[in-house]
Length: 226
Image 1 (cartoon, rainbow, N blue to C red):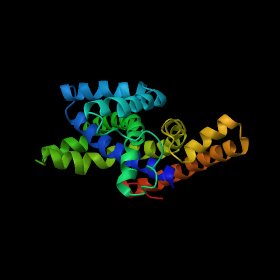
Image 2: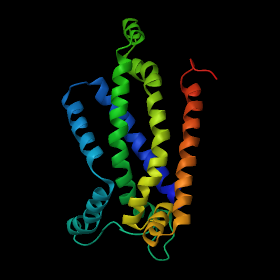
Image 3: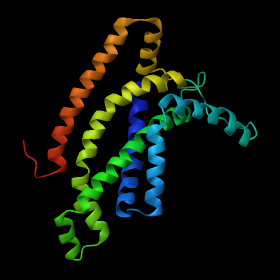
Image 4: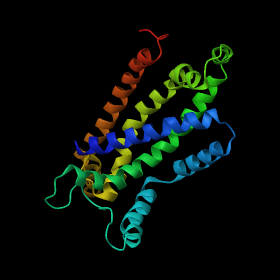
C-alpha cells in the first residue's frame, strides 16, 4: 500500500501537468513557450533519478531551512514523524519523493503528448472542423484530444511497471517504507527470493497494464471494437 500511495500520487500529478502542458505546447508550435517546454523536458528526461533525488534532499534539508530561518524543512526520510500518523504529516513526507518521480514522468509524457497532438492537428478532419467555424477549444479538446490521447494510454501502461522499478531508487534515497525500499535492501543483502518476487511482480504488472491499455482504447476511441 505504501508504494501504491507514492506511485499513484506521482502518476496523477505527472499526468495532470504533462497532458495540458503538451497540448499547450502543440497548439503554440515554435513559440517561446514551446521552446522552453522542450528544453525543460529534455533536461528532465536526461537527469538520472538518483541525481534528482539527491538534489531534492539538499534542497529540502538545506535551502528550505535556510530560506525560512530554520522554521521549516521538508522531512527527508520515512512516511511519518514519530507517532504523528495524520494525513497532513503523510502529505508533507510525500512532497520530495513524489516530486522526484513526477518530474521524470512529466518530461516524457509532455513530449509524447505534444508529438501526438501535432500529428492529429494536421489531419483533414481537424481542418474540416475548423472550416465549419468551431472554436479552437472545441477542436483541440473535443476532436483532437480523443485521438491524440491513445499513444499516451500505451505510454502510461508501460510507465507504471517502470515506476515500480524506478521507485526502488527513489524509495531507497528517501527511505520510503514500500516495495522499492524492500527490493533495494534485498539487493544489498543478496536476498534473491525477494528480488525474484519483485521482478516477477514487475513482469505481471507489465502484461496486465498492456492488456488494460488495449481494452481502454475501445472506451476512448469509438472506432475500435473488440
